[in-house]
Length: 202
Image 1: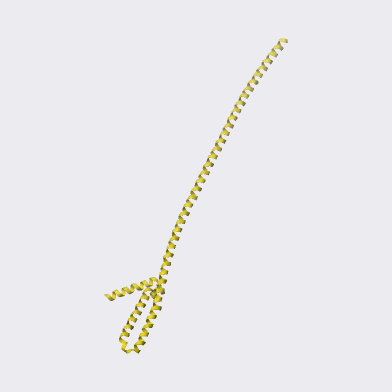
Image 2: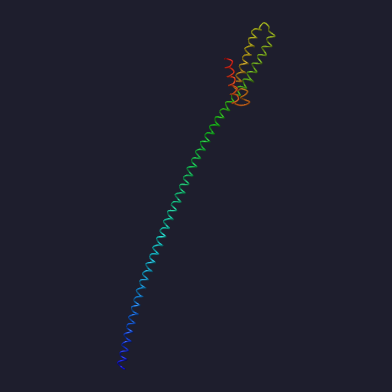
């Protein structure tokens, strides 16, 4: 019975030792697996951090490039707009200068026309009336002095010629058609007169 108990205890101890060894092996194996899993988790976390940093770097890079492009396009837009405004301003200045030249030429022509009108009016209303008055005086004098009639007729003829010349000069300086209708109609009338004169000469 003692030997049986001893053998039984030995078998129990052996099985116990085997169980302990088996549990120890399983524990070590699980421990190794846990370490491997921890290492994998650490590697995964490092990969995630690296990917996150890479993503942030890419975001910052693209954001910077986007800002640079936006600033570049804004600069080009305002530069193009400034060039366009400068061209428009130069064209406007040229247009104003042309308008100023036209107004100056128009004012000069109008001043010359006013001066011609004044001279023509003075010739017609001043000297023409004076010559007509003198001619009338000579006509009345011819009836009072029959002996001086040939000389008075000659003087009257010269006065009539002078009056006609003054009237012609006055009309040539400012034709009636130019005063009433304008330059183009007066030029047309002048061409018609020149054409009539050529027809008469032919």
